[in-house]
Image (cartoon, rainbow, N blue to C red; front, side, top):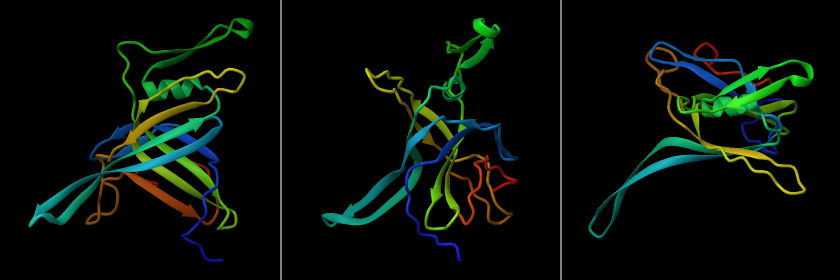
Length: 198
């Protein structure tokens, strides 16, 4: 059966953060993926800057550009590794057995890190396929932590994706990247998209 490029989206099945380790003219690389445990929802919004040319008491032309993409993610379980990646803080483990402690710390010298955000939705229109969303280079812009009386707490964060410095593609057809949305005929695990994999 031929791949269909129109599909229903139902739920979200997986999401990972891949630390951006280099974004330069020469290359774009990412570290190992950090799972968002129990991802529940993702929403994306293209941020469009619009300018209007007016004259003769009317709008004559509109020029617009997609400047960035903003997003919100909700997930189910607290992860100190996720917090460390989002904020630039540190995550350590100490002790053994009953005295073992996992600690997330954030201080004055820490700054939020860039990461690549990948999310997967299993695709019911292409039997056995999936849809991947990739925001190439993003930072968190808000990270609320909330407890809920008599119910499970969920965690969220907002972020903004920006264009890469690195230009992807073949000579004569290179461009910076903001976002990719891929429909696969057969589902595949989330992995970082870099120059060699793009």
